[in-house]
Length: 258
Length: 261
Image 1 (cartoon, rainbow over the protein chains, first blue to last red):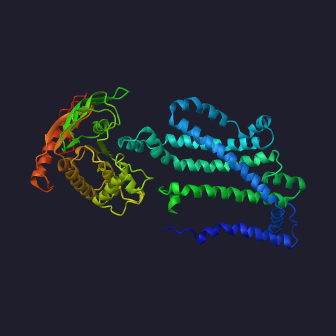
Image 2: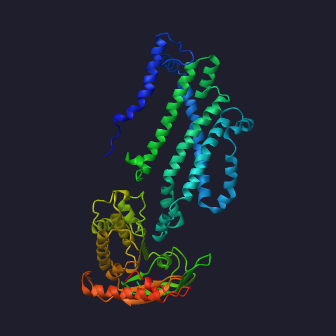
């Protein structure tokens, strides 16, 4: 039995909490104005105000919707293309060089063309996020399929599995860990591109809150938005990990044993 | 089920000749051990019979029916356990019984778990088992479908001597019960003499059959009996001959460096 929670995990809280209390004390004592770096109390107040007015909910909802749709499209396409190029030599020779070529373009360089093609509203934002998610998932799936242990495939052949049977009962479970890891890095990139997308012009979303805070000179709004980004990113990643846990119980890894 | 390997040769795409004119038969329920050093193509031969590779020439026949590719009646245990890490121990055993109905499979899995001394381990993961236990699961997986032919590719070579002796006993027990024809590959003289009815000695470059001999001591065999030792000595002498008759290009005989003296 491994403990689900240990007090040593709290050690990581010591530094940030000490810094927050220290800064709060410095500002309360009047040694600093806290205008450019608001103390925790002020952050809490402006967060509370945003929640009370319902603004926060609107922004979070807008942001989450974009990320989820972009992530779904990007990871879906990445998985499909990765499966195709991983499983078939023809598809790999045909498609992989082009995809690798596209990957060499810094993703933010797509922003202008996306805006030109898709307009400045939701479509271009979601396309950008999907683009960010696509590449790590594609690469992960491709390499995972190619590194499936030939010896396990042979087990499937000896015991009479068809190639479809091998794909579903050996290749798929074998690539699962790498695929899920690539989804996680894809999700991280998705959030990164989301901010880029929202900074390029949005009327709602946490990225809009950042821009708004900057234009109004409200450091507290900016920091609150940043914190909410961190919380959302972490929460989304945790949800992904939790969903994948039952699929990876068999793994004999350090993480599973800790 | 009778297994006939008839003039089988294997030449790889790069021109390397791995096997030449292999002729081995194993009668129904017989245990035939292929004995040879590394590089003499033992494993290659087993892969051809398993249908994992294609022979370049010659035939492999089951009861006089030529086969190509994998065959439902042919099952195998590899050098490593090769369990599927994402399946429970029980499901791994069941994996060998693709053609069984679900209830029959479940029944046989339970029975086999009991037989291999892992009753109650059915729901555990392969990672929870020791190497010897994993190899027993692999043996159970190979036998759950009651194969006509069982191929063993040095499945005990990675085990310590204590575990190995237990596994030998287990294989013989299961063999007495299910009577598959067994073609096994080994480099261990003791193992071959203990398990096999017949020993085929191979020599390398290209792999071919050097000599074939019947194993006389009656079953159950006693490793400590003089007859067992005598048999082992006869096999070693045959191996010696196979090495002496090998004439490498520089003309020197290799026999004097025999590891068996």
